[in-house]
Amino acid sequence: MFKRFVSYFDKLEDRIRFRLSRNPIVYALVGAIGIILVWKGVWEMAASFSTLDGFASFFLGIIILLLSGLLVSFFIGDSILISGFKREKKLMEKAESEVRSEKEVLDEILIRIGRIEKELLKPGSSSEKTIE
Image (tube, rainbow, N blue to C red; front, top):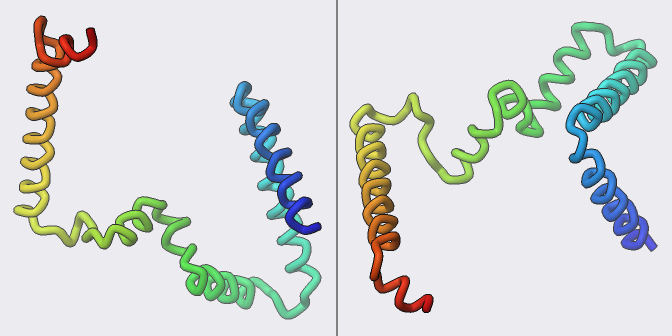
């Protein structure tokens, strides 16, 4: 029963996203309205608790964001999460020599790709013979 319920709304979501993606301005407005209504609901629920004054709300919010790991990702960005999964050092933690060596490797890869592309586009190359 629950799987059918989730499956139905998953398919419904796919259809709606497909239609909205054709008109990005309407998609952005629908998303903005949804986000604002969610925050309005959170704000009004928090207001119903008399103990959640400004100071308590701030610290409770910080604790929730810290424990969930969202504080840094929300205010800094997702790239920090991706680099963490890859166990990469932050750009600021890398030595200048590491950054330069990475750039040299990338430059070498681009040169190799360029050579391969030229080889493939040459008339009479082996790739043309196999295609025919």
